[in-house]
Amino acid sequence: MPSSSDTDRPLLLVPALVKGLAIIDIVARDPGLAFSQIQKQAGFAKSSTHQLISTLCHLGLLQVTADGKHMLGLRLFELGSIAAAQRGVEREAMPHLRALASEVGMTCHLGVLEGHEAVYLAKVESDQPIKVNTWVGKRLSLYSSSLGKVLLAWLPEAQLDAALAHVEWKRNTPHTIADAGALKDHLALVRSRGWSTDDEEDVPNIRCVSAPVRDMRGNVVAAISVVGTILQVSVDRFPELAQQVCAAAERISAALGHHPSA
Image: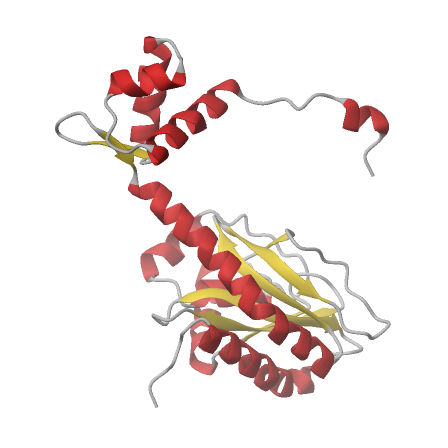
């Protein structure tokens, strides 16, 4: 918990970011403005306004038309779509996660791919006394967690290779797959059966089962998982849990508009 001195400390902001967002807000409210109009509304010096707009355009956050008009960039549309999709996934997933946690008696998570890591968007505890120490916002390994492996399994080859290129391979336990070639072989198995496991690969004495969540176009946009200790999850129980997790993932996918062909 933050101390009183922490809460009393003034918030430190990065001036350039604040100014850049101010320019984005101006263009969002009144698209098609010329440079001089943006500079006048922002009240910044011409040189700094020029640097800020050039940087925003370079990042794809703004774009300039042939006649010098400024519009919001497609990168903002992309980020907004991702944010909306993630919030939509979370909203639609929660009732199904609660039902799944009650059904299996274990902790359930919803996670998404963010950069080169998986991150938990939601967590639901069961009413059982055994708890697993996780939290919303926790980042996890893509190669040693069941949820991460599901998020990798359906990536296009180029994106998968890019993600694996950023992995710092570490053998967390004797069960960890710590080699790109072996992981790719394992991901083929994940795709063929439609679900993934973590058999003490990330943390000793912890097992997980995960399944993909798809959007209306069939793209994997998230994954859900059930996590428990080795006392709760025997290897023999994997198929049963997989069936339950996949059924919940399919219900969430349906809520997002995914309807696989018969």
